[in-house]
Amino acid sequence: MSTAADQIISALRAGHEELAALVRDLKEDDLLRPSGASEWQVSQVLSHLGSGAEINLATLTAARGGGPAPDGDFNRGVWQRWDAMPPAEHASGFLAANERLVEAYEGLDAESRAALRIDLGFLPDPVDVATAGRFRLSEFALHQWDVEVAFNPFAAVTPGAVPLLLDQIGGMLAWTSRPQELAGREATLLLRLSEPERTYGLRLGERVELTDAPEQPDGELTAPAEAWLRLATGRLGPQHTPDGVRVTGPVSLDDLRRVFAGF
Image (cartoon, rainbow, N blue to C red):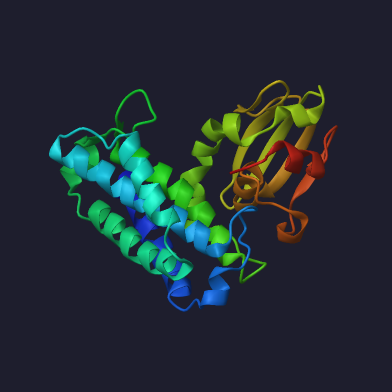
Protein backbone atom coordinates (compact mmCIF):
# COMPACT_ATOMS: atom_id res chain seq x y z
CA MET A 1 0.00 0.00 0.00
CA SER A 2 1.41 3.39 -0.95
CA THR A 3 2.11 5.94 1.75
CA ALA A 4 1.41 9.67 1.71
CA ALA A 5 5.05 10.25 0.84
CA ASP A 6 4.82 7.80 -2.07
CA GLN A 7 1.72 9.53 -3.45
CA ILE A 8 3.24 12.99 -3.17
CA ILE A 9 6.49 11.95 -4.83
CA SER A 10 4.51 10.35 -7.66
CA ALA A 11 2.53 13.58 -8.05
CA LEU A 12 5.75 15.61 -8.17
CA ARG A 13 7.02 13.37 -10.98
CA ALA A 14 3.73 13.59 -12.92
CA GLY A 15 3.63 17.36 -12.60
CA HIS A 16 7.23 17.68 -13.74
CA GLU A 17 6.64 15.54 -16.81
CA GLU A 18 3.52 17.50 -17.77
CA LEU A 19 5.14 20.90 -17.40
CA ALA A 20 8.44 19.83 -18.95
CA ALA A 21 6.60 18.64 -22.08
CA LEU A 22 5.28 22.17 -22.53
CA VAL A 23 8.42 24.08 -21.55
CA ARG A 24 10.74 22.17 -23.90
CA ASP A 25 8.88 23.59 -26.90
CA LEU A 26 8.57 27.22 -25.73
CA LYS A 27 10.16 29.95 -27.84
CA GLU A 28 11.53 33.26 -26.63
CA ASP A 29 8.25 35.08 -27.24
CA ASP A 30 6.35 32.37 -25.35
CA LEU A 31 8.55 32.86 -22.30
CA LEU A 32 7.69 36.56 -22.26
CA ARG A 33 3.93 36.00 -22.15
CA PRO A 34 1.99 37.04 -19.04
CA SER A 35 1.44 34.07 -16.76
CA GLY A 36 -1.38 33.24 -14.38
CA ALA A 37 0.66 34.88 -11.61
CA SER A 38 -0.40 38.48 -12.07
CA GLU A 39 3.03 40.13 -11.75
CA TRP A 40 5.17 37.51 -13.53
CA GLN A 41 5.75 36.48 -17.10
CA VAL A 42 6.17 32.80 -17.91
CA SER A 43 9.96 32.84 -17.62
CA GLN A 44 9.75 34.37 -14.13
CA VAL A 45 7.48 31.58 -12.95
CA LEU A 46 9.98 29.06 -14.29
CA SER A 47 12.76 30.95 -12.53
CA HIS A 48 10.84 30.75 -9.27
CA LEU A 49 10.24 27.02 -9.70
CA GLY A 50 13.84 26.39 -10.71
CA SER A 51 15.38 28.32 -7.84
CA GLY A 52 12.92 26.69 -5.47
CA ALA A 53 13.94 23.26 -6.75
CA GLU A 54 17.60 24.10 -6.13
CA ILE A 55 16.88 25.25 -2.56
CA ASN A 56 14.64 22.26 -1.89
CA LEU A 57 17.32 19.88 -3.12
CA ALA A 58 19.95 21.49 -0.90
CA THR A 59 17.56 21.18 2.05
CA LEU A 60 16.84 17.52 1.31
CA THR A 61 20.53 16.76 0.81
CA ALA A 62 21.40 18.40 4.14
CA ALA A 63 18.76 16.32 5.93
CA ARG A 64 20.05 13.09 4.39
CA GLY A 65 23.59 13.94 5.40
CA GLY A 66 22.72 15.09 8.91
CA GLY A 67 24.03 18.60 8.29
CA PRO A 68 22.48 22.02 8.88
CA ALA A 69 19.79 23.30 6.54
CA PRO A 70 20.78 26.00 4.03
CA ASP A 71 20.54 29.45 5.57
CA GLY A 72 19.11 32.72 4.31
CA ASP A 73 22.38 33.74 2.67
CA PHE A 74 22.37 30.55 0.61
CA ASN A 75 18.78 31.13 -0.49
CA ARG A 76 19.44 34.76 -1.42
CA GLY A 77 22.45 33.74 -3.48
CA VAL A 78 20.34 31.23 -5.40
CA TRP A 79 17.60 33.78 -6.05
CA GLN A 80 20.08 36.42 -7.22
CA ARG A 81 21.72 33.99 -9.64
CA TRP A 82 18.39 32.94 -11.11
CA ASP A 83 17.13 36.53 -11.31
CA ALA A 84 20.17 37.38 -13.46
CA MET A 85 19.47 34.66 -16.03
CA PRO A 86 17.85 35.46 -19.39
CA PRO A 87 14.44 33.88 -20.10
CA ALA A 88 15.81 30.96 -22.12
CA GLU A 89 18.05 29.97 -19.19
CA HIS A 90 15.07 30.17 -16.83
CA ALA A 91 13.42 27.49 -18.96
CA SER A 92 16.42 25.20 -19.40
CA GLY A 93 17.52 25.72 -15.82
CA PHE A 94 14.07 24.83 -14.51
CA LEU A 95 14.04 21.60 -16.51
CA ALA A 96 17.39 20.49 -15.08
CA ALA A 97 16.92 21.68 -11.49
CA ASN A 98 13.45 20.24 -11.04
CA GLU A 99 14.46 16.92 -12.58
CA ARG A 100 17.29 16.68 -10.03
CA LEU A 101 14.90 17.42 -7.15
CA VAL A 102 12.31 14.88 -8.25
CA GLU A 103 15.00 12.25 -8.78
CA ALA A 104 16.29 12.90 -5.25
CA TYR A 105 12.85 12.35 -3.78
CA GLU A 106 12.38 9.22 -5.88
CA GLY A 107 15.73 7.93 -4.64
CA LEU A 108 14.54 7.81 -1.02
CA ASP A 109 13.92 4.24 0.11
CA ALA A 110 10.91 3.22 2.19
CA GLU A 111 12.75 3.66 5.48
CA SER A 112 13.91 7.17 4.59
CA ARG A 113 10.45 8.14 3.37
CA ALA A 114 9.09 7.15 6.78
CA ALA A 115 11.88 8.23 9.14
CA LEU A 116 13.80 11.13 7.56
CA ARG A 117 13.16 14.56 9.08
CA ILE A 118 13.80 17.71 7.04
CA ASP A 119 14.43 21.21 8.38
CA LEU A 120 12.67 23.53 5.93
CA GLY A 121 13.97 26.62 7.69
CA PHE A 122 10.63 28.37 8.18
CA LEU A 123 8.90 25.94 10.57
CA PRO A 124 9.68 25.46 14.27
CA ASP A 125 10.61 21.80 13.87
CA PRO A 126 11.83 19.47 11.13
CA VAL A 127 9.09 17.67 9.21
CA ASP A 128 8.70 14.27 7.57
CA VAL A 129 9.16 13.60 3.86
CA ALA A 130 5.43 13.71 3.15
CA THR A 131 5.08 17.17 4.69
CA ALA A 132 8.16 18.56 2.94
CA GLY A 133 7.04 17.09 -0.35
CA ARG A 134 3.53 18.46 0.10
CA PHE A 135 4.89 21.99 0.52
CA ARG A 136 6.79 21.60 -2.74
CA LEU A 137 3.78 20.07 -4.47
CA SER A 138 1.60 22.99 -3.41
CA GLU A 139 4.07 25.47 -4.85
CA PHE A 140 4.70 23.44 -7.97
CA ALA A 141 1.12 22.54 -8.89
CA LEU A 142 -0.18 26.09 -8.62
CA HIS A 143 2.73 27.61 -10.52
CA GLN A 144 2.42 24.85 -13.11
CA TRP A 145 -1.09 26.20 -13.68
CA ASP A 146 0.34 29.73 -13.91
CA VAL A 147 2.49 28.62 -16.84
CA GLU A 148 -0.08 26.43 -18.57
CA VAL A 149 -2.89 28.99 -18.45
CA ALA A 150 -0.73 31.37 -20.50
CA PHE A 151 -1.31 28.99 -23.42
CA ASN A 152 -4.63 27.36 -22.48
CA PRO A 153 -7.38 29.46 -20.85
CA PHE A 154 -9.10 26.24 -19.74
CA ALA A 155 -6.08 24.89 -17.85
CA ALA A 156 -6.70 23.20 -14.52
CA VAL A 157 -4.50 22.14 -11.62
CA THR A 158 -3.23 18.67 -12.45
CA PRO A 159 -5.81 16.19 -11.10
CA GLY A 160 -3.37 13.99 -9.21
CA ALA A 161 -2.29 16.90 -7.02
CA VAL A 162 -5.76 18.13 -6.04
CA PRO A 163 -6.71 15.59 -3.33
CA LEU A 164 -3.20 15.75 -1.88
CA LEU A 165 -3.41 19.52 -1.39
CA LEU A 166 -6.92 20.04 -0.07
CA ASP A 167 -6.03 19.58 3.59
CA GLN A 168 -3.09 21.98 3.29
CA ILE A 169 -5.16 24.93 2.13
CA GLY A 170 -6.48 25.68 5.60
CA GLY A 171 -2.99 26.40 6.86
CA MET A 172 -2.38 28.82 3.99
CA LEU A 173 -5.42 31.06 4.43
CA ALA A 174 -3.76 33.31 6.99
CA TRP A 175 -1.39 34.61 4.30
CA THR A 176 -3.43 34.12 1.12
CA SER A 177 -6.49 35.99 2.39
CA ARG A 178 -7.39 39.64 3.00
CA PRO A 179 -10.24 39.69 5.52
CA GLN A 180 -10.21 43.51 5.43
CA GLU A 181 -11.88 43.25 2.02
CA LEU A 182 -15.06 42.21 3.85
CA ALA A 183 -15.29 45.66 5.46
CA GLY A 184 -16.38 44.20 8.78
CA ARG A 185 -18.88 41.69 7.43
CA GLU A 186 -18.88 38.20 8.89
CA ALA A 187 -20.31 34.94 7.58
CA THR A 188 -19.80 31.20 7.83
CA LEU A 189 -20.31 29.27 4.61
CA LEU A 190 -20.74 25.58 4.03
CA LEU A 191 -17.97 24.65 1.60
CA ARG A 192 -19.16 21.72 -0.51
CA LEU A 193 -16.55 20.31 -2.90
CA SER A 194 -16.65 17.67 -5.61
CA GLU A 195 -13.95 15.57 -7.32
CA PRO A 196 -13.13 14.59 -4.61
CA GLU A 197 -16.10 15.17 -2.34
CA ARG A 198 -15.29 17.11 0.82
CA THR A 199 -17.24 19.41 3.13
CA TYR A 200 -15.85 22.12 5.38
CA GLY A 201 -16.90 25.33 6.99
CA LEU A 202 -15.44 28.59 5.67
CA ARG A 203 -15.47 31.24 8.40
CA LEU A 204 -15.14 34.81 7.15
CA GLY A 205 -14.50 37.59 9.63
CA GLU A 206 -11.48 39.19 11.28
CA ARG A 207 -9.76 35.97 10.27
CA VAL A 208 -10.46 33.62 7.40
CA GLU A 209 -10.28 29.96 8.34
CA LEU A 210 -11.57 26.51 7.56
CA THR A 211 -13.66 24.76 10.21
CA ASP A 212 -15.79 21.66 10.50
CA ALA A 213 -18.94 21.81 8.39
CA PRO A 214 -21.43 24.11 10.18
CA GLU A 215 -24.91 22.90 11.08
CA GLN A 216 -26.50 26.29 10.31
CA PRO A 217 -24.39 28.08 7.71
CA ASP A 218 -25.12 31.60 6.49
CA GLY A 219 -24.64 30.45 2.89
CA GLU A 220 -22.91 27.91 0.73
CA LEU A 221 -19.95 27.73 -1.65
CA THR A 222 -20.21 24.80 -4.04
CA ALA A 223 -17.30 24.10 -6.36
CA PRO A 224 -15.08 21.46 -7.91
CA ALA A 225 -12.18 20.92 -5.52
CA GLU A 226 -9.74 22.07 -8.19
CA ALA A 227 -11.57 25.40 -8.51
CA TRP A 228 -11.55 25.86 -4.71
CA LEU A 229 -7.77 25.41 -4.66
CA ARG A 230 -7.43 28.14 -7.25
CA LEU A 231 -9.94 30.44 -5.55
CA ALA A 232 -8.14 30.14 -2.21
CA THR A 233 -4.83 31.03 -3.89
CA GLY A 234 -6.03 33.93 -6.03
CA ARG A 235 -6.38 32.10 -9.35
CA LEU A 236 -10.13 31.98 -10.04
CA GLY A 237 -10.76 35.05 -12.16
CA PRO A 238 -14.04 35.18 -14.11
CA GLN A 239 -12.33 34.00 -17.30
CA HIS A 240 -10.94 30.92 -15.49
CA THR A 241 -14.01 29.89 -13.49
CA PRO A 242 -15.48 26.51 -14.50
CA ASP A 243 -19.12 25.55 -14.44
CA GLY A 244 -20.30 24.32 -11.08
CA VAL A 245 -19.01 27.18 -8.92
CA ARG A 246 -21.94 28.64 -6.96
CA VAL A 247 -22.16 30.98 -3.96
CA THR A 248 -25.27 31.70 -1.92
CA GLY A 249 -25.74 33.84 1.16
CA PRO A 250 -24.43 37.22 2.29
CA VAL A 251 -21.21 37.21 0.21
CA SER A 252 -20.71 36.87 -3.54
CA LEU A 253 -18.10 35.07 -5.60
CA ASP A 254 -16.58 38.46 -6.42
CA ASP A 255 -16.33 39.17 -2.67
CA LEU A 256 -14.44 35.91 -2.25
CA ARG A 257 -12.14 36.73 -5.16
CA ARG A 258 -11.19 39.97 -3.38
CA VAL A 259 -10.65 38.18 -0.06
CA PHE A 260 -8.36 35.53 -1.52
CA ALA A 261 -5.42 37.53 -2.84
CA GLY A 262 -3.22 34.50 -3.44
CA PHE A 263 0.52 34.44 -4.10
